[in-house]
Length: 327
Image (cartoon, rainbow, N blue to C red; front, side, top):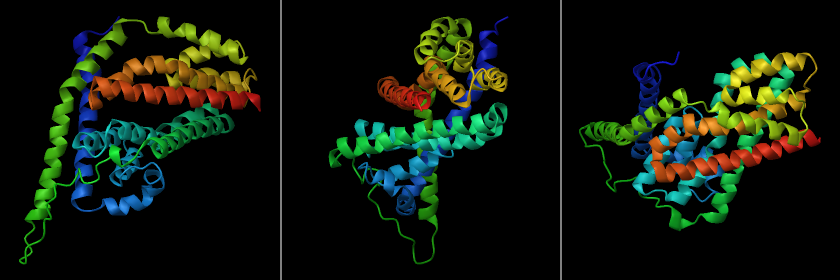
């Protein structure tokens, strides 16, 4: 029996919206604090190898490194940079692309190492995580190259995040400038969250209700068959791809005994899961990407981000699968 709309809103939509809203508020406030207290110059030293060649300002480095801890917070910082005029649309797309590897890093510690590798076994698990890491790194490198070729000083406004004031401490040691910076950062985080929250709530509600009462598997399950046939994988790959497309953990649990029985080698198992990742984009775009990206950026720019992200992921996964099966 399908849950009621009220149960969906309280059990799934509301917790997710509150979690994202909190991460955005923290990320935007953090970005403003880094600027206000001059911490950008120290963070820039760590991220300069990425932001420098990509023709991005130093502030973007803070968002890139923050993404390793929280993807939502990192995206929230980039949204603040775009809204302030620090980055135009093209520069923002480059920054989002560079973020990819750092968004992957956090999942190594929260999912891949503690959950997926134990299910798949050390050999297959490490190979799969290594391939995913390589794909993410290749996408990040693509972003750096795109920035080097496509960005110039016309795409960024370095002083946009600064209000132009130079707060100084009074001779008596008055701490009001610091207090004001903290309050301003907090206000900016709340304002940005309040701006995003309505559309985030609307889109998430529509997506969750739609995916609950309509069967997406009938729309995507058929995509697994030609993909498996094209790559010459075992016939058992088809159900694994379908399951993996809807839930990574369930897909891993499905293929694990088949690996032990010799139906899949390490390479064909990893290739099957990567193809499952391609098929899963159909589902994840509806369930996660659209509500998240539209909530952060709005429909127009959010669509551009989804297209760029998905296109690069499909391209590099396809290249990885080809190399994996060829050698």
